[in-house]
Length: 148
Image 1 (cartoon, rainbow, N blue to C red):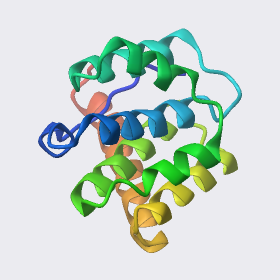
Image 2: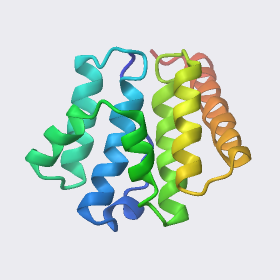
Image 3: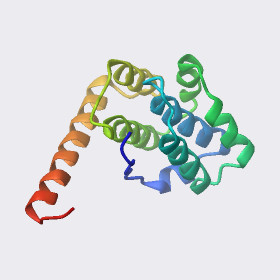
């Protein structure tokens, strides 16, 4: 997987209680491992972001151990704030596109998480298209401005 470059709006996430932050991170961790490989870069990303959110070490270990999609989907229903739910979907879309391969499993998981939080599939598709457009613009900027 490529280095993950997220665009977090931390103000929404920082307002969550610890359990909700753990759910947010479990969704990202589970998505990162959707391809059957939770590599060192992905693990480091999840650990780093979890620490930034102030999640205690023992809870970070819990996040890293998550193995069940259904558990994470059910827990995602705890996130009632629409802004936070949209932020999670955006982060999941960015993460899923970071390796330039969006698998059907990743797409389904994002959809299930979104629906559990009350986000419409049309809105999820809109966010995904926005992320793709953003990636394209970033790549064009590298060419135009002759960046490495």
